[in-house]
Image (cartoon, rainbow, N blue to C red; front, top):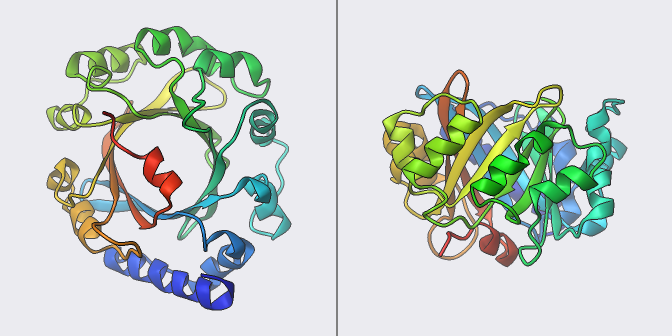
Length: 300
């Protein structure tokens, strides 16, 4: 896929995905990001991400991978007028990580209705990172991680960080721990981690889902050491996997989202827990590269 014809086909898929959920999709809103990053779409992954809560679609975003040659996605977006410059310390985080750690690729989360949202930094799967090393080596990283490195190590999560996401809109960031074994997500282990993070006990439905997961990612704020949210996720090709029985809209989208590769749709279901709520998410892969396939593979 290349040139305007390629991004036109991609826009049609975005519009189709939004239509499945009854979400407004504007060409005027989407065309600037498609043209700004048009050179990355031919060989990269593209994902539709939805968040549901209480039977309602809370968010829909269009995510895509970015090769290292493009550089900092936020800087690229800034050069194309997609975002505004900010003097918030979060702006330094991407460069600090980039300068100190090996990087496999980058990524962008772009909300269908809200513009550029997140940038991702993906570490090589052969060189996953240790939270303690990240906390010590990255000067712009907030102190929240240092407060939790012992807890993460005690739960077997040292040297398992596969990615960091930086949410510029909400001033938050995530650590992604991939390839977890059943011992990491057993009921006892999950409840222990949730309690140590100071989050409320999850419902039986969420606990049952957590036991099927193979990845987790805490969300940290900028001005507090508290973990704002903890999410667990699992890869599947089954649209009717557990969250779909809780939030039917997820299953409907999972069964019908447009995709371009052979075989079944590749899906990543997630359940999230915060101090005030729990809810479910779905990533449905529209384009899928070999590197992304390896990154989201199930443990074992």
